[in-house]
Amino acid sequence: MVSGRSHKVHQNPPLAPRTQRSPARPDQTASAIRKSPSLPRASVSTWLLAIARYKALSAHRRRIDAELDARIASTVADSADDPEAALQKKNRSELLRNSLANLSPEHGEVIDLVYYHGKSVKEVADIVGVAEATVKTRMFYARKKLADLVATGGSGCSLG
Image (cartoon, rainbow, N blue to C red; front, top):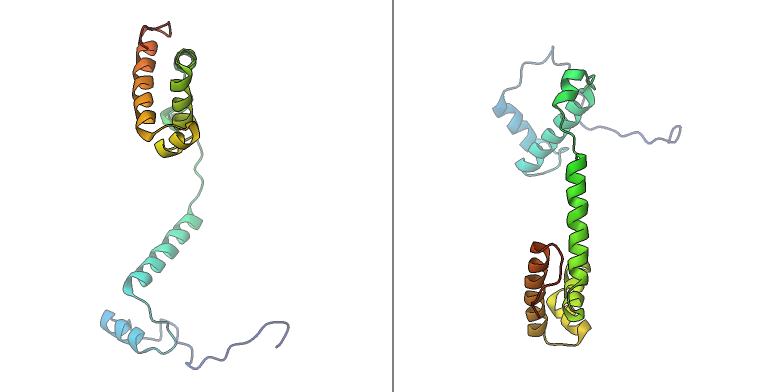
């Protein structure tokens, strides 16, 4: 070891520069790859993926950051909601919260566990202590009542 690095001994002499060699033909290249003892054996798709990866990395390194001028900036869509859309979302969320509060405790519990805690029907049945069919029935009627409450603006509904 010299200066902390190991030196490899190559069995094959280095290739001459491209100007001194004749241009490689595809059939010669494929034959050389197949006969080479130093190259690892891999499928063609592996080689192609490696080539594509290195080409993409090289292109990424060469990429220059373009200046953002007023013309380009005007074409970029603003992902933030405008004030009207933000107000509509807020009102819709408030309406849904009020409607959820108007559900019966059994229906509210099932909706909360399924939609807000991501529980499955079986998990909800185990937590609540009822049959899975009962959970499905409660979910059906809870969604139906919730739709009616949202449609009427969150006011009380006569559904039981």
